Image (cartoon, rainbow, N blue to C red; front, top):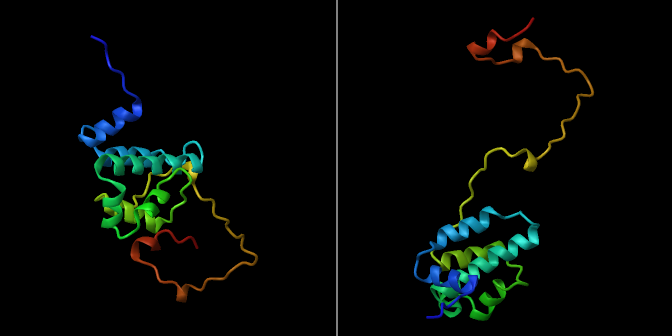
Length: 143
């Protein structure tokens, strides 16, 4: 008996459709890789992932009707050349019963934002009468 081989895309769609691959896990893994390989590549990967979920779970027409947009607009939003607004992506996520959340990452020096610190141009005089200190801080004052 000959074995039937299927493509990766066919296997992915099958697994999304029958829930052997959780849509939330799949999408989170794609989003976790955002920025790897350049912004354009990452955005296209995420859009393709959303497109796969729409095709496996419902249809463009059902999701578009649920979020009150035209199904052609939804196809354009999720296309390879799509450049959707954040508000459009959030609508699509809501249509798929997802919510978007922002979670603070652990400190990553590769993505640290450098702040310019201005060097003081003049010495500043602080009068002790205007200083309000809590008792534990009093022991740290050097006179």
